Length: 484
Image (cartoon, rainbow, N blue to C red):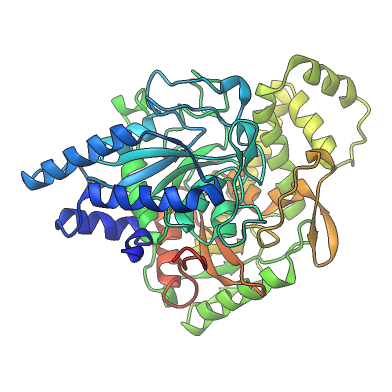
């Protein structure tokens, strides 16, 4: 029965459909494992067990009658605690939202329910989804199942930890700066940051509860234990929000290729702005070598964009989004600081001040620069199908709850500014591109490493197909020791 906990969502729904397993059986198995293993991880932090058991029982009864609720019929899943689910808290780790209960499901959650999923828990994250780690005053700290002294990533850290530990069948996370991708990398699971706009993001905190506008660059997306789980999740989640659905439809193109040897591959594995630790680089190069051995043409020299320029544009856009939740005194301080910044100052503080203080005309200028980036990416993808890049510069590192402004991360023995880790995730986010994080093995020391697979805008299925083709050659999901 232990193997059941680590089966992919696609395998589980197939077994449920064939009546090889019952929804109640799978749910109770996850709950029993969570009772035993979750206290050491703190991945799942809120529960709706009674309603989940009732829904699982109803799903089994429907199956017995020959009925199906949809492609996720009877699958027990969890949801990141920044995404609203009726009947459950949605705190986003913020003490002031400890008692917040949603009046309605986020559209993405409703789509999962309409497809037959059984939601039984919410997973942990950093306060307001704003860190590479997952801890907060409401629910405490989440640990990585590969090493509980280390982080699971953030902000969808509880999501990835729960999947890696075999506590849930599928997860819905969110991403604006790698918040799906870096936990997938740190925990050895799969995650998709969809093309921006493909999955409705309403019902996500931040912004404040009740926000209707769609945040620039922010997306909701699936995490799972296989590339197939990402495809399944995208099928269910993708589509216009209610206003646009009156006239618009989303029909994503099929993958450009399916065989690894057929993909035309660009590779960008290092950059002076955010160098990659040697232990991670070894795994990434091994993955590229595996692709080359299969016969795929590879170009490791081509660059779609200038790294420094792309990162600067991304940070300006990112901090513009985040500033909508900053308190007025902080914004006033940034406004007063802006005029004293040197034009060549590209420090994290300078970019924060510029992004938080920009006028709308300034944002329009940066947005045009982003459009130029998007055009250069589009040009790259005329000759290549995917670009391979790091997700993060290191493997999962030790918990560090020091002041965010002064934190560093150690790369090849040198201290790197903490927020420079946004570099590798930021390119795809700024350009609205889909990106999959896929496990490609264990680094020296036995911790997981993921590779980032970036594909053309709206060609999410190409990134997923590459991840699926790569898994038999190198990587794929592996259960952490002590949990199998």
